[in-house]
Structures are given as C-alpha cells and as structure tokens.
Length: 194
Image (cartoon, rainbow, N blue to C red; front, top):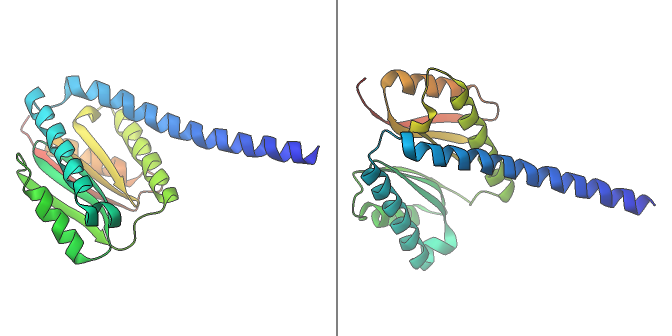
C-alpha cells in the first residue's frame, strides 16, 4: 500500500514537471505563430534569419569537435546573430565563431560563448521556464509589442533581440530584469524610429 502511494506521488511530480514544459512550449508556440504576422522584419528577412540558423546548425553538426564538446545555440534577427552557450576552451570557441561568421547573410555576430562545462539538464529546463516567464511578462505590458522581441535564456542570462524603438527596448529590459530567477539581462536590439 505504501509502495503504491509513493508511485502515485512520483507520477504526480513527473506529470507536473511535464506540464510545466508543455506550458512553456505552448507560450513559445503561440508567441512564435503570432510573431510572424506582426514582426517588424520583412517576411524575406524572417526567411533569411531561418536560413542562417539552419546553416549554423548544419555546420555545427558537421564539425565533430564542436558538436561533441560544445553546447551552442545560434539565433538570428535581421542578420544580427547571437551565439550563446559553452565551449571547454577558447580554441573551440574561436573555431565556432569563425564557422558562424562565414555564413551568408550574417551582418553582425554577437559572441556570448562562455568558456566552461556545458550546462546541466536542470539548468536548460530552468532557462526554458525563464524564457516563457519573460515572454509572458512582455506580453502583459500594453505599451509593448512583444511580438517584435525575441527572448533567449542561457544559464540564467536573458538576451533580448529584435527591431524596436529605444523606448520599447528600455521597457523590455526593465520587465525582464524584474522576472524572478533572471541573473542578468543583455540587449541586442536594432533600433527603429517611430
């Protein structure tokens, strides 16, 4: 009887953890679909950014040293590319940056690769949760069009990207800074006039 109740408790905990992941995925999915239609980038630029990210993923997978020893993520907004993650040494970090900077369409590359061990699964899960919390907080502000802001979280650091006005950027940074669990906010915005 005790064994059955322990199994029930474990099942409830696992279900709750999975549901948290589903909620985060749902927030990201809804936001992603809505953002295509209202994004400040042209449809062509959105497609170009997708091509850059796919090319980066392909190049990373084809490089045995990088794919086996690093944890890297490449995000492109209007040709401005953010690279986050971890590499065990500066040689592999520099090799990755060189590889990504050669991709057609990259206008600017923001190197945010940290030297060290790759993050644990629990850290990655927490980063997904933080991203969904920040994105939800951005959508809650009526002065902000959160569809124009891409949120990337790596090891508790939140990176904000997008084509926004200076005033929108300041609002977004202030909101992200006040989300519980966020260690640091870095902005990689391209400013537009409005």
